[in-house]
Length: 460
Ligand SMILES: *Cc1c(COP(=O)(O)O)cnc(C)c1O
Image (cartoon, rainbow, N blue to C red; front, side, top):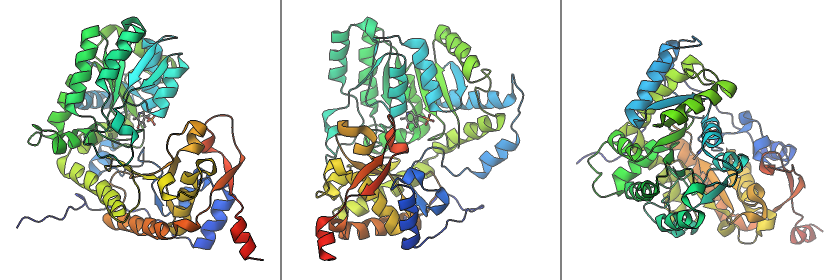
């Protein structure tokens, strides 16, 4: 019988201690932080699932490569290794390093868009949307209808609605659409993958109108692995072959190396267009740096060059996707409402369904995230009414899994804490804001629990 247990495909050479706190300590810490987990020090967190961005554990090969980092201002061999590694996977003619993904986005939109333009995407990530709007263009989200129903299972829930894309191009006119984007996997839509069939269909439409297609590639390796698992005809292909095929349909990409680059910082912008590349490099020099380092140290370029290849290793992807699915499937089987099916990098709990007695105006996502911290020292993040105000369509709590950082027993611990909180969900109260900034309020808002009249009366 073949052995079925999926294990971490690595052993641990260097460890970082995590600190346990008592519930009483956490109560004081979270109160002092205005019940906003962004304002709690990371040393007071036991398991940090705030984000999978820049939080990966690097490999011995990456650390070894960093020692080779050449810090020359121009023409560093570290850049050559970085460029070759990117080109071997992504296949684009020009590779422009940036300090992280949003810098690539800013340069792309500054060069390609003008006021009044429209940029369709399956779903714009928040920095992508903000950079698009900053140059006066409209960020248009065109997810398939299934994406809007959390409980709905669909193998490629990250797909773009190709019919609506064709319609939008007809309605707006080709001149108003300088590019189309596809985000793989669809982060804001729950880490859901995009199928090769959908990439092809979107490319067909773009090609017909002469509009370039750019891929927001942050989780390209996870997307490639989902295609291997779920799309007919891809089971025997390697994730690298699948990734190459994905990018062969595109004219360029933006990338945050803090995700599937397995690095703690970095990103890049790629294009096949010589004229655009020159304009992009000119802008890069203005704000990021010379085109052979783009705001990164030579050692960062080396870490990314190695990390991109490690992210495509099949054993790694198998463990990565299984670990995220284990968390999601385990809590869902006990009745916890999650966005289905489990995504690549994160599990999203539907806080409105988890806490039906807490109205959206009292921030059910904040209430649940705070309870997970109080119960087990776990940090997650609200994606809902605090983040988006009254425009929020859902109140979700995202548990993002850092790459290679936690083991199976850490994930089992997270499952146990969530199920404990699930059992006493009726006692969880909502929150109200005591202080907020004018924009991006979720980072700095301060809150307090709403007074509970029943509870107070009982105490009399
Ligand atoms: C993280 C992310 C970005 C932005 O990258 P940063 O490195 O954080 O600037 C863009 N798009 C998606 C889909 C992302 O997940």
